[in-house]
Image 1: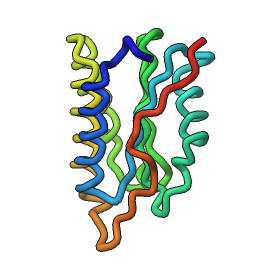
Image 2: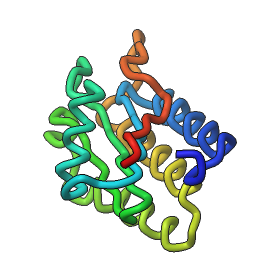
Image 3: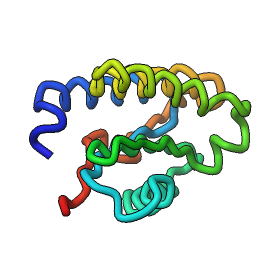
Image 4: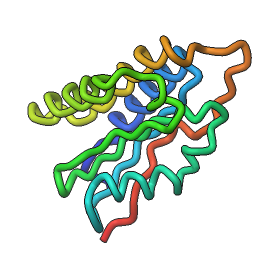
Amino acid sequence: MPHFISKQQEEAIIHAIRDAESQTSGEVRVHIQKKLAGPVLQEAQKVFFKLNMHQTRQRNGVLFFISPENRQFAVLGDQGINEVVPSHFWEDIRDLLREHFRQGLVSEGISAAVRMVGEKLHAYFPVQTENPNELSDDISFGEED
């Protein structure tokens, strides 16, 4: 996906993921899928399982799924998160992303939302003495159609 985000923007997002994960035992992934084969939430759920995000010890993985060509995104949290966070938790993150995207600040929005997740998850999943990085911090990219 060479034209959606630059290498520098990709590195900034990865840095934001590492910052977020330094505040929480939660795990964050970003996936960019050029085109959707179905509804965005359904596609995001497939990727969530494909990336083994449901296999973290505390079930506290968060996926940012972005489809630039379709101008859609989804933010999914695993079962452990959804059992403890308030109902507006995901709405705040969605609204932050949406506002940045409207302004054309895509990578900045992703980075800001990732950091917000880290801050918010800190209250529910603080950093443990042993805090292994259970999932890759790299951005994953879907196949181009």
